[in-house]
Length: 90
Image (cartoon, rainbow, N blue to C red; front, side):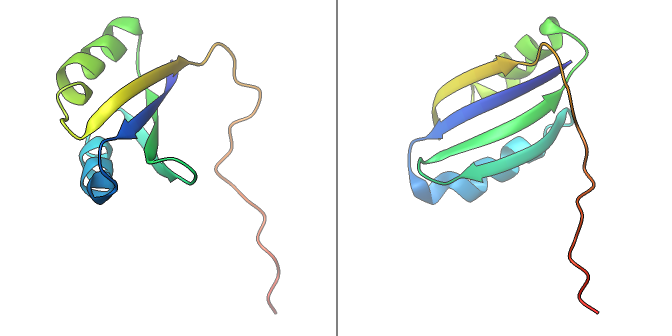
């Protein structure tokens, strides 16, 4: 199961520390600092809703720099690929 978590951060100076704290969670695959808002977005791979709930309650909700959390559960994935085509610089 895949979930994306969007987190608004209380203070811009806490972005790096908060991002690193989120990144240390085993089920977190990616953490991104998004332009336009003081927020982070994390991609999690979890086994089920119960595991997601546990992570939200025990690991993420207790991070004091996070002022708002929105969770998006993926229903279907049509493409997921880490490979990208890079330009040939020869």
